[in-house]
Each structure stands twice: as C-alpha cells, then as structure tokens.
Image (cartoon, rainbow, N blue to C red):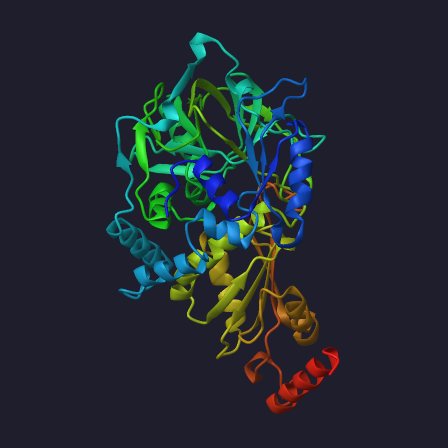
Length: 493
C-alpha cells in the first residue's frame, strides 16, 4: 500500500485507532517533545500524536499540524510500510536474494539491488508534484524555516532541530543519489547546520565537491509516504538507492520532480522540500548541543552550513517529527524494522545466524544479541567478526552470542545465559574499530574498542573438558498437566 501524503497516513492511523489528536495549543519549545517522550514510553509504544495547534516560543501560531510518534509501535511501523507485519517485507527480500546463492555479503547486496530493479521499484519522473503547490524563494523574503513548527526537544539543545529530514545528495561524478537522515539545526530563517558524520555518504559527496571547488546542491524532503523516511534510516549499502528501496517496500515507484532552485530531483509526494547549497570550502558552523538517542547531550561540533534557496510545500502539509533520547522511543521501532527486513541478506552470508536483536537499552549501536547454530569451536567469534564487517554493524560496541534455542528478543533470557555460560577471560574478545560519532564513551572521537561475548555452550576444542551440563527441564506431559491444574484453580473450579 502506498500513501499519497503524510495526511493520508494520518487518516489511516485515525481509522485504526492509532492516533491521538491534541486540539489544545502546545508549544514547539519542549512541550510537544515532552508529550511524545511520555507517550513513547507507554505500553507498546502508545499512540501516534497529532498536535493540531502548535505554537512557537513567543506564542505565534503555525499553519501546519505536527505528527510525532507515528512509527512508535510494531503495529504502526507495519502500517507505515503497508503491511500486516514488517516480517512480510523480510520474506520478499529473502525471495529476491535466494534466486542465486551469493558468494559473499557484497554479492548478496548486489543481488538485492538487481532484484529491486526487477520489481519496478526504480523511481520515475513527473512534471509536477504536490510538494510544490506553494513555493517560497529566499530572494522573495518571508519567514523561511520560521513558517515550519520545528521542535526544540531538550532544554539544553542548541536550538530547534529537524529530526526526520530526508537529506538528498548526489555524487558529482556518478550522479548516484544518497538519502540520509541527518539532523538539521535551524540557524536562521534561511540557514541550517547539516549533521552528516564523517562515515556517512553525504559527507563523502561533500568531500568530492570540495575537491572540485563547487557548491553542492542539497534537497531535504519532509513527510510524504512514510516509507520514504524509513528508507532514509535503513542501513543500506552503497549502490542501493533509498528511494528505490522505498518503492519496493510500498509496491509503487517513488515519483520525482525537478527542484525549483537547484539541479536536483525531489520526491513529488513530500509535504515540505527545503532546497539549498552547501559550500564545501566554506567555514563549518557550530552545531549542537543536542540531546540524542544515546540519552546524553552530544557536544557542540563543526558541521557544514546549509544555505537555503527555496522552500516548497503542500497546501495541506503536516510536519513530521520525532524525539530521540533515553529508550524506549520511536527510533527503536524504526531500527527493529530494518533488522527484520534485512535479516535474509545477513542469513545468506552467515548461514549459522538464527536471529539478531538490537535491544532498546542498547540504542542501536551499543548492543546486539545474536543466536547461532553452533557446529565448531569459536564459531561465535567468527560470526561476530563477520557482523562487525557488515556495513553499519561496524559501530556495534558489544555483541553477545547465544545458542539457537535462546530468544534474543527476551533480554532477561539472554542475560541468564550470559551469567550462566560465560567465563569472562575465555569467552571475551576485544577489537579496535570505528565508532559512532555520537558515542561519548571513547577517549578519542570516532575510534574505540568493541567487545564480543560468547555465551554459547562450550565445546572440547574451545578448551572446555568438563562435559557441558544438561539444562533441567520438566517433561511436556508434566507441564501440560500443571497448566490444567493451575487454570482450574484460578478459575475457581
């Protein structure tokens, strides 16, 4: 199912009983974010929130409602992608890459890319789009970003930040598009700071423009089909166009129109499009602090200045936003969906892999639980090294490996086997690797140590000669009889 706009998604959420409308005025300065923070920590992720009357810090009324926590539950995440469950998409991805078993992860990604193209997911061009019903150009004056109800999330944030931007850049040589979700700090009506980390493709494109001595065209889409923003967050490898992936997910190609002020194409269904340039040779600006998904404020650092040349939007646009901070939050559901959808690709390259979970407490990169079918000594360590070499998994600080029968989505169960099966000296490895730029723990930015913990049963070849003990479990018959007895007792019979 494809949505024509954020408003179409909001209407679907409303019909499904997944939307809470807040009709009273609420301030974009802290209040809306605080409400979303509370709701996201409700059972099951709470409801999506539509603030119909957002007001600025000085009381000015905005003309656009704010949608927040839209992706914040398993049900809404599936709804956003037009499915009953996100596992349905994982099955489709698996079918694409199983046609010819890949020799390695790179070949598996290549098979996926070609499979997406065969499914008519390649973006298409059109002459006009709803995203350009209203056009504001910088040389015409106006409030620019001041028209949009951009939120300030935490008290010590450096200012308002766009938190669900689809930042579109192109390689100046190959013209390959990249769509990244890089937060944007509002610096003024027609300026912002773009937080693309040195590991990101957007930063690589910027480096090429700097070497060429040319300004870099950038477009930022907000809203549209919710699959578009999801694709911008997905840990896809180079060469797979995020909007092509979105087209595959929504089963309809994403339509593009030429931007009104920059030589770049933008999604026609977006609610807002912000166009402009980055001067790669210009002085970077202070960006931050910002309360991030780590649960801490990331400090002020230098990032590119984005000079806005035009802002276009739908007449009935809705501004999409999210809050990041201490988990659980909306971003947990986005990350979990990526894992479920891309799991078949990982399994093709790591046949021993049974399941993988990124618990909310690990805020994406800090912690991963993996289960495997262990057949030979040190296989758990082999799997860890392979995962650390798989794209964004290079940022995962701690990987805990358990046997195939352990439910990696039950943190309590994983911790039991971590305590029961691990001899710390024997079962722990450390490596040096790149780290997430937002990680405040390493002594040096962007570089740190990673740890692997093998909580599987130990084999003779791993130095364990005592004979691994059997776990104590009752018989199925006794368990069934016990359930009957307890059910009758609780029923008062």
